[in-house]
Length: 276
Image (cartoon, helix red, strand yellow):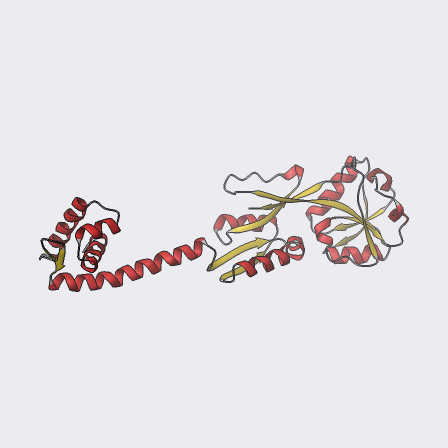
């Protein structure tokens, strides 16, 4: 099989009428170009150029090969342009993993801006819980994933590159007419006699509630177990209890509930939002 690099040298020499000019165009010395041309002629089994007092002239076989070389050079340049467009994010597919609260709060604006800047990129978003998202990253089902962790379950995975995007504080969700709404900040220890709305199915925020209350010195009394944050807000608005939730989970807040911050010395954990 003919050496492509030598074939491109022949193409340049035929177009320029000079082996020296072709060598300069390809970043080679003239002696190296002459040696490579001799090797190409050996591969072809016949002369490809005639060496003249000034420059060269391709033989009929050289002309035929140089024309093929022009087509190969076009394809190689097109291939490089394809690679450059991927590097510049002008084409391709971004597969992104996300969890529901991030998808409802962070992603819409981020994806809108990304699409505006990179119109040729196709975006696929796949949702999952934390364990599912990590598995997607490990198997290559997604290239990037939005993850989260708390202080007691920090992500420590040498196979993932993690970037800390922001902190998502825990807030207290109370009815709009609750007497607690007049407090500038709330102390968790003062809520020991309250009924609580908790997330069902061992949801991470249920662990947050139990850990926080125990650290404040009491065990929470559970009035209702909800399956999503909208349901939790509805039960709070109905007066069935109060709830803890990450701030990002309440982007779509009902008008009949209020979100209250905790005092700075209250053990209400902050969730880290990470890009993996």
